[in-house]
Length: 116
Length: 111
Image (cartoon, rainbow over all chains, first blue to last red; front, top):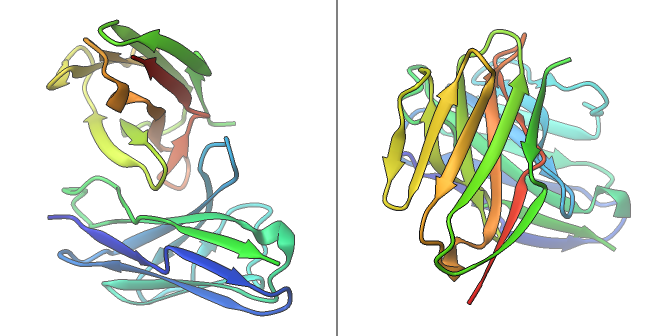
């Protein structure tokens, strides 16, 4: 159990376009989902926390208008990178947890975004 | 400021060696400490530690938490090349109850 699916695994887009990344919990209801960003040879940096049905909470320094997060259901959260620029190129990872922490924090497989 | 520090940053060993990875933390509202293994993609869960002094074991991997001294260690015995990865330590806590990650330890196991 406790599987989190993330899609796409890899995406290349042109500067100025928007990219949507999906994160789904397949066999449990994820009351909370987290979005991380990881640069090469660096650790995971939390970008935002989203709770189902409410607005996401963004970490300091993360532009909420640039990184739009929607958590419309207990099994799906999306991250949209708007007006992408080359500096947004990174590895984006979601993780999900349920209320009882029975599954700990399960990560999706990640999305490698390259903006050209 | 909440922080998690891992050491060493990188380590090269030979197959069969035993390694110990360290994780120290200063995090308010500590709830638990987690270890992950990250190869080329997203981290995979290894252990979650909540109580001091209780060793968790899975095959050749084991981990223990010391809440008094605020650290944890991850041991890997009889290392194999497949153990080569970045090992991440994360603490669940802080003012907003989130996972705070350390910088990771890059382990390379040579044949």
